[in-house]
Image (tube, rainbow, N blue to C red; front, side):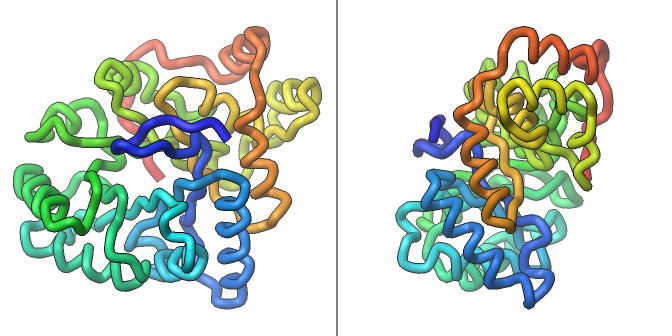
Length: 273
């Protein structure tokens, strides 16, 4: 598995997302097994949030990483309405308890909210000094939001990014690259499998003996400083996600994707789901 540096550690360029995990108790064993399989295959970054199933996803993660916490780079996120001077440490403690760990490698503000960023960053820094988190970052921040951050210590920005949603390429992604700040791409194959039947992706996938989902992941992860975090529960999907890191897209593949999903020619509002 290829890796890149994030928050001072080496993480897999394709990680594991957990959105919607923990919502159905009948799926819990399968979700735990999927995350464990992903770890075995080298996908050492696991992304979760207190929002996901209102803590249920964090509980799934805790069971998946039991006895192998040191092999995992753990990312979680705090609700904006908890992002105050007092709210962040309390929310972090709840996440730590659900995750059954003493330390979160990377703790993100889930999206911009009501509290001043100075207050949120101050609370993050206190958590870091207390050894509760390794680094902090943000999610769903556009370039203006990034400029508003009162500290250069932000480790990442997690945003919606896939061939269909390329708005971040206009100025946000280039800005992050100049600062060597990795971008975490959520929904890298879009929601609901919308992209998986697209003729351009099907043709490229056929050439590589791959799936359209793998082409989407390889497209995102081909770039220096981009980490894709797909969610998978079925073992075959976990294996396909991990194998996508080995795919190398040809120049003609990239041109075909550009024709099918043109890169942005102007600034657009940040897409979110």
